[in-house]
Image (cartoon, rainbow, N blue to C red; front, top):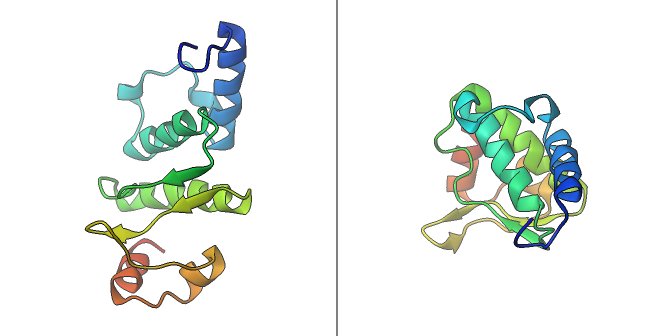
Length: 122
């Protein structure tokens, strides 16, 4: 409301649409502390999308999640890519390890560190 100078009703509607986009429309009235780690991460993605960014930068978006929650976050990231969102998703110590189209990235990663990471989450 303050940053985008949006009307409260408009901001609320946008929030609901973005929660629906990340699969959490049923959690609109929940407090963050009642959400799982994966749900909190997806809400963070929705919050970032509210700013209508040209690209998304992710810094270890699944590092603190239980294995069951990792897929939920990865699924949202893949949907963003499918919708045309540009993002940098895999870096190590400030260095891009893998640059590829999403299909190539997930199906045939070149970097050993990328391969290890993907083997643990897919």
